[in-house]
Image (cartoon, rainbow, N blue to C red; front, side, top):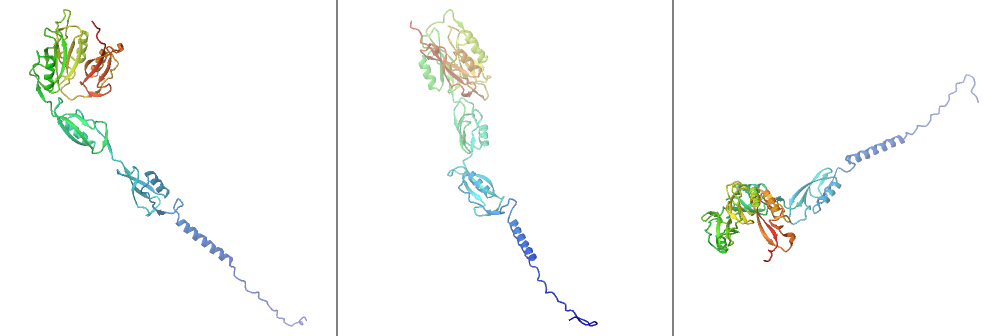
Length: 396
């Protein structure tokens, strides 16, 4: 029923129930914190390359150098390789490592590996022809040891005349090189040979240590008798040097003979040309002398002697007072005798011609072989022997 007029009516106020707090924003915040924590932990365990900053060094001892460096690189390490001589291990095998395997090491670190290598080798210097004191210095500089053996020789005193191993070869460091050193020539007196038979003169010279060169010349003396010699009797000469003898063929020089040119004091090349132009054969022999290298110091027969055309003339050529250089011997096999002789003389060598019997007409007058062989290295002034093909003389 509605209230009467003027009557106060109190209305009832209804209070709504309290609202419950929201939970989902807090859940989102918690989830964000968890994500940030996980991300932070992940980043702290990553290096710039996206991998862990340290790991264990692998075992590489016993591997080849290549395999060891590759294995280390796979773990992020670089290798420092050092060598050590080892005769019982295959070359290149890793003998040790530092740090050892199992050590924790940051990626990018270095691991030193020691690998097996062979003994060091060195080139042997050529010291033949040098004074022994210079030779020893060169060998020491090449990290080689040395031992000397002294022998009598026509070479100057204290000069190296041979070495073993030879120059140019490769040997282990600290190898001993044996040097054969001249203690100077063993001197002997040249005997008187005139009037002896060729066989007796040759035997006498050989017994005294001399070498002999025989030239056959027409003479009034009986066939086979020594009519002259060089050097003359009483000369002091080194053992091993050459004594030339002229042996009579038993007939006087022909009326149409030629005079032996006087070539003493000339160079070997000029002397050879003059003797050949005179229609004579020439052989040159090296001798020790204070005259300049390549100078003719004596000739046999003497200049001015009348001899038949085609006779042999011997010239002795000085080796010079100082050390000699080495040179390559020309290869003259297959050349005519005169051309071969000129080539060898121009190269600085002395030449002896030896007849080589042959039945091949194409080899007559041609060099069929030589000693030393072409291309070999020899001291300038040394003698080269050429063997010239000769057909047998026609039957009378």
